[in-house]
Length: 72
Image (cartoon, rainbow, N blue to C red):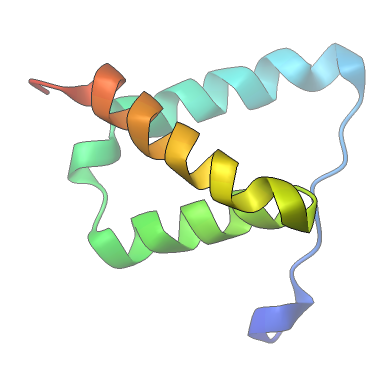
């Protein structure tokens, strides 16, 4: 699979708790994740949104991660 071949993850509403827990686990480890991988995670998360939402999302994500990982 090339860089442009990644597909969105489709999941059922009943599986949303899995996605939330995995997301929370990633955030709790954010400071331990190498910067290139962090950038890739942000880039992939941004692709899920409409183009006009991406700038807002990136700012919200940066603020959220900073607030929830301070001192870890």
